[in-house]
Image 1 (cartoon, rainbow, N blue to C red):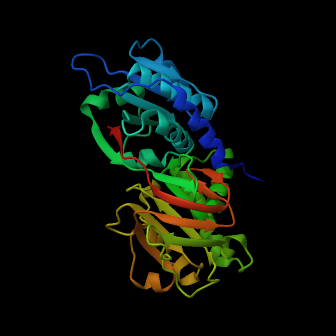
Image 2: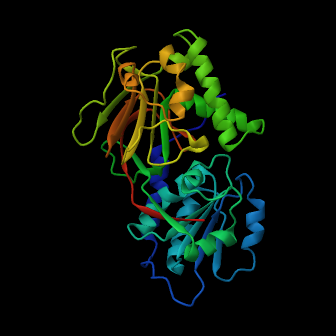
Image 3: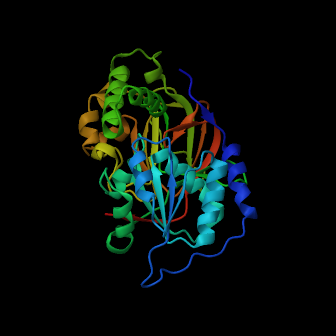
Amino acid sequence: MERTIYQFEDFARSAGNSARAPLRLQPASRSGQAVRVGVILNRRSHQNLAETRECEGRSNVTVACPDTRHDIVHELARFAERGIDLLVISGGDGTVRDVLTMGQSVFGNNWPKIAVLPKGKTNALNVDLGSPEDWTLSQAIAAYTNGRTVRRRPLAVQPIDSKDPPVLGFIMGAGAFSLGVDAGQDAHKIGFFNSLAVGMTSAWGVLQALFGSDGNQWRRGTRLKLAYLPSGREIERSDFGDALRRHLMLASTLQTMPLDIKLFGKGQNGIRLAVLDHPRRRVLFSVPAILAGWHPRWLKTQGLHHVAAEGFTMTLDTPFVLDGEHFAPGSYRIEQGPELTFVAE
């Protein structure tokens, strides 16, 4: 089944529409007054009906159910005009990506605090933030005053030499990762969501790579060039497999992954990357231990690299995935976006 391939120009065109909106700066929290809340509800998201009912009758809560990214821009501009203290995003990782991307030209460097209600098919960001899966609007509003705050910087992804706003997201991958997302979307259709879908599709991908031939799509990888920013130095590569191809690349700024997978190295800051050059069976047989945090030094010599970067460039000839959606092949810059403050239980 073919997947929709999203174009960066579509995001940039929608985000640019907010430049005409008359905006004002966010106010400081007002002592003794109710927290002003703006809620973006994805009406198509899994489990969101109850949240729609909870928003009713709250004078301090403004609710929007945008149908398009163009609509998101204008609803966020309306929230900014109202001077919201808390932006609540009720949906999955894709909804969060779209709202953050569209909000750049609305909020600039003056974002309100953000709460995420995990109502989508995949909610990796919420796993990292540590709030419960059944977190409600009432709990999120209470957490604005009494809860924890977590600071995260999303990935900022944009075509090289583009002056358009980047797309902001938290988990990005290419090669076998893209195939895994395809398999995960098919898993959603038969009722598997969140960590269960991640575990099932990860296991399927490992089995395909272990027992398939080098012509199998799960083994052949993708043409992928990776280089550090700003130096331009190529990200390390072993001698295994085709020198122009990589089997898998995964990048994120999250600290905790679904199922508590510990694929990234310890003590990594900035953008964390895991890159596998070629699916050598010695590495694949070690996957359960690797995902549990066992990262012996010999993995690097076998083509599995754990690296950290302030930014990097990527050139590839197949689509890549950012927070569950496919984007077109090409050459891209990946840096760190604005520091955002999330409230959590």
